[in-house]
Length: 268
Ligand code: SAM
Image (cartoon, rainbow, N blue to C red):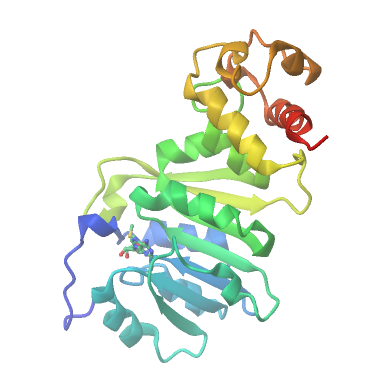
């Protein structure tokens, strides 16, 4: 950290800065950026990961919301021709604007925990232009992302992310690796958008609707939770047992339910 500049971590920007060199190296090794690639770092902060990412020779765009951090980032990395600083909110950022060179994006970030779920949903809308994503998240969120059917972690987040991506829970990181330390355990996750969707829905918005409705009351049977959308006959036509609870269904079964809904809503 520069002696010329002391930044006080801000809670409202979810600032927990990485300072453990071992953890930083482990994350950089997992990402394994290479020259010729196009990496996008969300929330570079004081540059803990930025330095190693740039060192790989990859082209690097960073997106930082906290205006107070911009001079520091520009001072540390501005001289590198591969570095571009984008000031603003990653939730509103148009990722399409970065793919003019035809290269898919590798998105990385030690994410502010308060925006991680909406940010992942925002990025899934751009899945076609993303090679992969590596994020530091709350461990509990990573467990939900990587969950399998049947358990309490399986829900809307698991299903919608696994619809688009392969999910790998890489490793856990304790609070001591950060300054200030967060109150929760963290973990690194890798998300790789499928080249071909394994279970494509006729309309993925209907999948979202069925999943949201089903998990609104996760302890009830599907027959009950879905009654506004699908009757018992339609559930049966999807090959689903209506007496099950939503957490017992896998992604393929939710897609079949969404496709039944698509049949019902299709114009005559
Ligand atoms: N990457 C740094 C590190 O590992 O030390 C900082 C990580 S800190 C958990 C999160 C960073 O994201 C902060 O720099 C914060 O200012 C920034 N940030 C918060 N909300 C953001 C947003 N909506 N868009 C872009 N950056 C954001």
